[in-house]
Length: 166
Image (cartoon, rainbow, N blue to C red; front, side, top):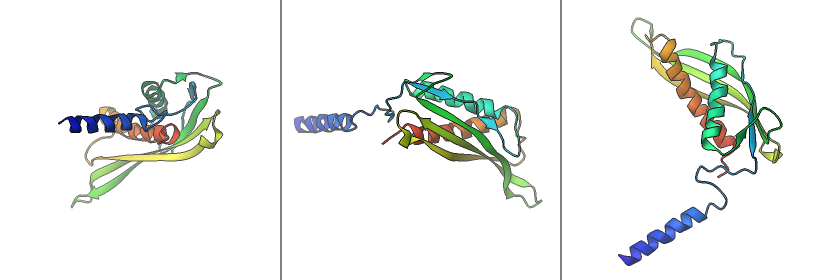
């Protein structure tokens, strides 16, 4: 039993120190401040307000998952971009040639600038989708639910690409 406890403590200490200066969230940066510029909606199919929702959710996620201070200018890290696609497409059909299932897809172009480490800079498209019932109207709470789900995934992908240096 003592040998098991020793091995457990050994591997636990190895696991917590092997990551060097990484935090448990995987974020490693010398930056202190971050700026999230307003993301414009340039998608061919415009859904009003989704650009504000994305900008706010990105800001909230950064504040919740990092210790970076949010600023309006001269930041160490800068996120900017645009929503380039908002698309609804039928995925499966019924015998009556109506959609049994639809798919909402959103694509966001993100330009990330790290003023302290320029090799981390990128401009990349992030996209995700969520399927929903064909007879559901994409309005109100259903629209909010789907957009929130998609944005959560896109924002996590953006965070992983920009800050998580495993």
